[in-house]
Image: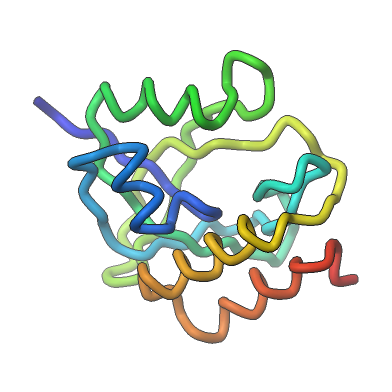
Length: 147
C-alpha cells in the first residue's frame, strides 16, 4: 500500500493527536511552504493564506487512504470548513521540493484559539522539531492576530 504525503502546520503536528486520529501514520521531515503565512481563523483553528515574502513551517506525514478519511472528517471537509489541495513544499533537511496535500481553511477571518488548541499547536511544533525561531510565530496568535 502506498502512502501519500500530507503537510501539517497546525494541531496535526501534535504527535499525540495524530496517533489518535491516524494510527500508524509515519512522521516525515520538517518542511517549508513559501509564499504563505499562518493564522488562526474565525473558528479558532489554524489556517494559512497566501502572502508574499512569508513562509509556513510544518511537518510531513506519510498517510494511507484510511488516514485521509479520518482527517477529512476531523477537518470538516464535507461541511466546508477546510478544503484539501496539493501544494509544493520544500523539505528543510535537503531542500528537495515535494508535492503533498495541505488543508486550507475556508474561513479567512481572524480569530482566537482556545488555550487547549493553542497548546496542542505549540507542543506539536516542538515535538516535530520545528526551528526554535519559528515557534514564536505560532505562539503570537494565542490572543488573536498579533498585528
